[in-house]
Amino acid sequence: MRVTGVHFTDRTDAGRRLAALLGHLRGPGTVVVALPRGGVPVAAEVAAALGAPLDICVIRKLGVPHQPELGMGAIGEDGVRVLNEQVMRASGVGGEQLAEVERRERAELERRARRYRGGRAPAAVRGRTVVVVDDGVATGSTALAACRIVRARGAARVVLAVPVAPWDWTERLAGAADELVCVATPSPFFAIGEFYGDFSQTQDEEVLRLLGSADAGTATPEREVRLTAAGVHLTGLLTVPEAPRGVVVFAHGSGSGRHSPRNRGVARYLNGRGLATLLFDLLTEAEEPDRRNVFDVELLGARLAAVARSLSVRGDGGGGDGEEGPSEARGLPLGLFGASTGAAAALHAAAEPGSAVRAVVSRGGRPDLAGPGDLARVRAPTLLVVGGLDTAVLDLNRRARERLRCVSELAVVPGASHLFEEPGTLERAAELAGAWFLRHLPSAPGAGGAVAQTR
Figure (cartoon, rainbow, N blue to C red):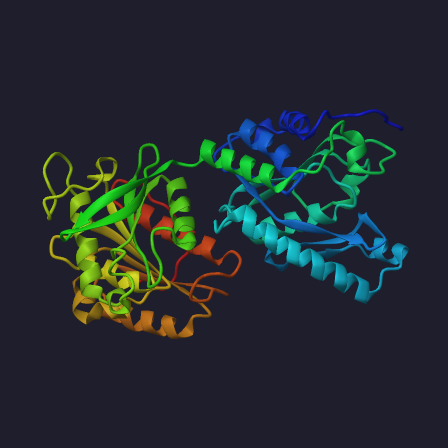
């Protein structure tokens, strides 16, 4: 059947019409993932209609050298690569030509990923329904790559949704997703743009604006706070979701602080699980240049303990230093999250007599720096999360755990190095931390989490 005429005014119109077909996916377990750039305006409408978070999956089409609009494959984040052998054969593209196109597109992919993400970790998709959205499907290579990426990141269900695709698109992409949704499947089909009145190129600025608007609409607002700990004034970032189940205070590692993209990525995940988070710098700007301070566990731990005491105050009146923590977080069940050397500070604070700390998580931490006396005094259930590739630190964590006298577990994340920079590893660490805090903070309902080696 031949279908002619413009189907969509622009990408916004296409997104609204696509969203009308996806109402059955509305719910807290859904995430919308867009293929930038053109897929972002479409996906923004879908995410708004579903009340779902909006993220991106950066993919680059590998265009035939003499016909760039014709895709012979695609590359994506996490090293995903998809080739269309049929198009390559028909176009006479050889290995050297393919390598040159891939080299150029890989550089652009990395540029866009850096700009669009701005240091943010990808949205947590493990165990969730992920709706992959683009402005259309032609050969299907980019859509297939995106589906493979979110599947590898642990999505429980993948839905590929586009405004327009060839009539036989379900055959081309059979098995790529659990559900395929499309507004129009015209025939003949030559190019996606022929079915839009306005198919002008989406610019980076629009992508950033739409992603920022989605964050503002779905993310829990954070605010900067001033803290007093052991007589020193420190700066922190506080995020409190509606009806918080507890509060987690972050202790950063050497060379890191409240703006650490890794810890902020973990904090966002915890916020999504109903936990308030407080990220603050344990050192002042004047103290940071002296590297000895970074490893002064007693100093850092004392300041962290002072903040913990200030948060344990429920009503009016001061904490241990005559100071109160932020009112939104006071009196909530308290957990500590320590990264690298910050883990030792967290355990030092938890070892304080009468400590209000109810749970501790160490990510790539150095609990051994807390010393055997502190480790033996910790009473809060403690989870040690270590990367499987971080063998030296893994051994130190095993030894430190032998000195703990509290409930403790050691969780090893396969394929992760010390900084958890490998695809999916930081997300896994966040999931383990969230499950631990929800299990052990007293007002929170139980939550599962795959961890190992329980004492």
